[in-house]
Image 1 (cartoon, rainbow, N blue to C red):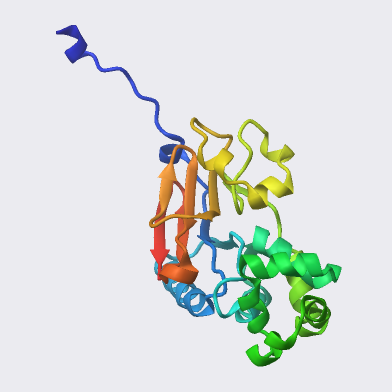
Image 2 (cartoon, helix red, strand yellow):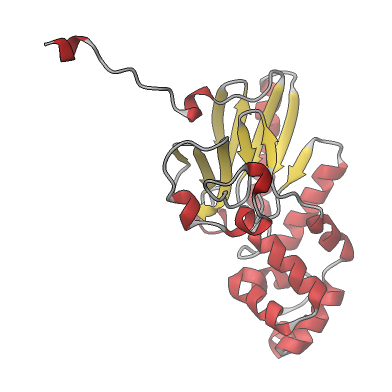
Length: 254
C-alpha cells in the first residue's frame, strides 16, 4: 500500500532542462548533402520563423556535410558563402565529407580522389563546370589534376574555415558526435567528424546536450543527452533544423 502512495522521484532529463542564454535564438541545420533546393526552402522557413518570434540574437549553425551525394554541392557552398557575407551570425561545422573534399582538392593524391568519389564525391565534381562526358574520359590521375582547376580556391578556403564544435549554453553542436568519457575540450577532430557507433550507442548523461548530424534517422532522434537531426535530405527530401530559445526547442523541416 505504501509503495502506491509514495512514488520514487525521477530526475529530469538533460533534454528537459537544457537552455541557451537569454536573448539568444539558435537554428541548427542538419546534413544538406548537395540539396541546395532544400537549403533555400529551409532558410526561407527559418527567416519567416525568426521574424515572427521577434528580436533576438539569432545564430544559424550548419552541422556539416554540405557536399556530396546530392546534385548541387557547388551551389550549396555558394549559398552558404552568400549567407555568411550577408552579415548574419552564421557558423559552419566541418563534417567528414568536407574533410575529404578539402583533402581531395588540396593533396593531389589519386588515392584520396578515389575515396572522395566512393563516398559521394562524384556528384560534387559534376556540380562544377564539367560535363559527365568529359568526366567519364578521365582516369583517376587526370581527374585529380582536373580538381585543382575545377573547384574555385574560394570554395576550398571557405570550407577549410569550418569549426569542429560550437558550445552555446547547455548545448554542444558537432557534426558526428563525441567520444563518451572524454571532456569536450579534449575531443579529437577525427571523432567529432567521423564517430558513430560508440556515440549513438552510449547511455547516460553527457557533459552537454549534443546536437549532431552524420547518422541518418527517419525522424528527429531525441535520446538521453543527444539530438540527431540528419534526416537524409539528399534522398528523403527532408532537411531539418532544430531551433532553440531559452528552454524551448522546436523543429523546422522541408
